[in-house]
Length: 83
Image (tube, rainbow, N blue to C red):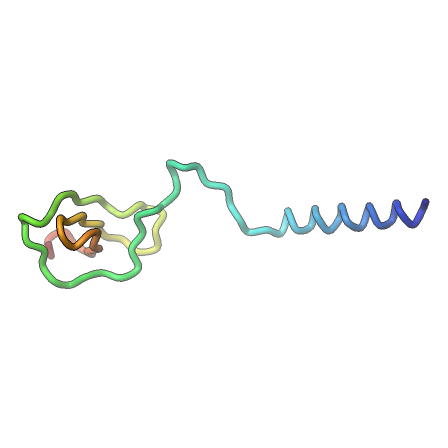
């Protein structure tokens, strides 16, 4: 009986340790940065191609803009003046 109790305490202790040491952080759906850019284009985008321009989420590691275009999809630009 004492052996079973020791095993249960050990398992619960390990689970608690894993939970505390986990670096996963809960995020709300609204706060999740899903428009982060890690590489940026350097060429100009024709005005007639641009559908939408959205500033990259402040939680992203690099700052810039996501440009949604008709034929090229989503592109990342560092500066709006380069568009």
